[in-house]
Image 1 (cartoon, rainbow, N blue to C red):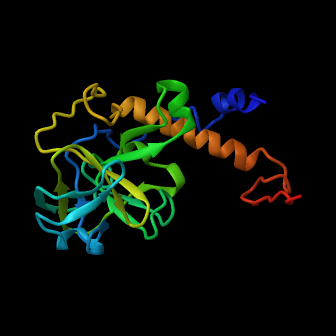
Image 2: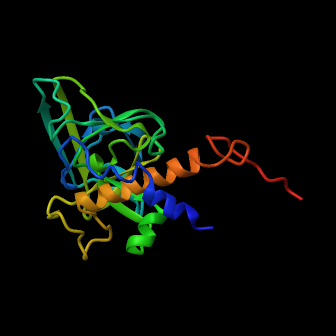
Image 3: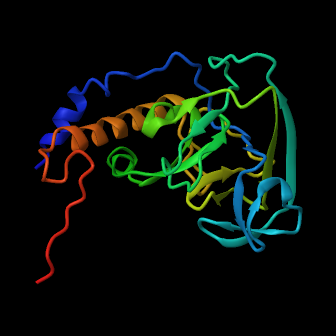
Length: 228
């Protein structure tokens, strides 16, 4: 029953514990202009929101924006190994209905049984850079100039982006270092622990996808049980 655990640890995917690109911790982050956010006004581009608007959060329903942080990023060269090079999240990779750009230090809330095994909590926040290679997520060049926008709230929140991706929005006063905070309601993983979790998630998915025979739910084939 638990044979996949042994195979997962022996997987070639699980042995890739680092990338050629620099890892960063979850920071203040930011969403690129054009990213849609669930709000009291419907799905709105993040740059169209203002202080006083409400945004749908993962744990606390609609919450009022108390501050809007905006920043313009300039990338003079296409250096995909740079620490601040954004990552492209393909459609549906993280329940997002459209492909989207995410900054490497932007926190993403993940749900994983592997997190329960290691931490006792299925929900953890990881920096986007730790997701490189997971379901096609990769660093790419968005252009020489782009705008970052981050709505802030009275407390740390997780908000809905592009239908299903869960983005972490820390309060401006939060101090996020490389260790998970005990006082916050969200467990923020340091970069190394986050990368290890994601690599194990990749290995687990590779095991179930590649090691199961055709017709038994393997290779992306969806199986149904008859209702009696």
